[in-house]
Image: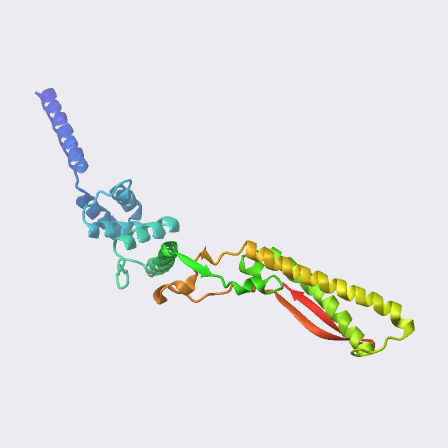
Length: 301
């Protein structure tokens, strides 16, 4: 009888042990969370962390949002208390993603250091969210402006009389900037040379004055240069007019700028630091010479 009793006792022990294993394996996520919560309250983070990790990763096993928030918070605090700041920050961010107004203040279960770390993480999350919202708003505004500009059809009306203005005005109107600069420079140089020589002679000998015999050769040479420069200037002006008329179009489609946008879409222009808008100008000024006066030209671009 004794061997049979011992065998029956062994079988009973095996059945009880197997039953306990089945019960542990069949525990629900809510029961596992309660077990992790109890371990956390006892200060046993080493036992709580594996259970919380099982409940949250790789896929959450908790159905209630409140349970997920609690699991992330407990996991984050345990990670913080064990020195794993990276995991703690990640878990706090996950909890804040699920509940943005989450706060740990006034909870006696958490240390002051853990609460302070959570608050720092919350501040960083809020700031990052604000920056992301600003970037999204800016991107949406740019896209809105782009689509609005693409819907615009803008024509620039070009006056006909501009073709007859010297110094490359017609070329500039025709959007031929380099050619306009070339015409303006050439006409200014030849015109200034002719006018300057004329003014010099007038200052030296007066209008209709008599040129001394010893200066006649020099004055004749100056007059030849003056007349040649004047003819060249007039020829360049005529050339510029003809060229401008050849390429003239009374109406040209152009890309609209912000001045055409509705007021609610306009934004004040912000010039980039250290940069200025390129500009060009042509200036003439009288210049005193020995025994007379001349005309100087300056070109800024």
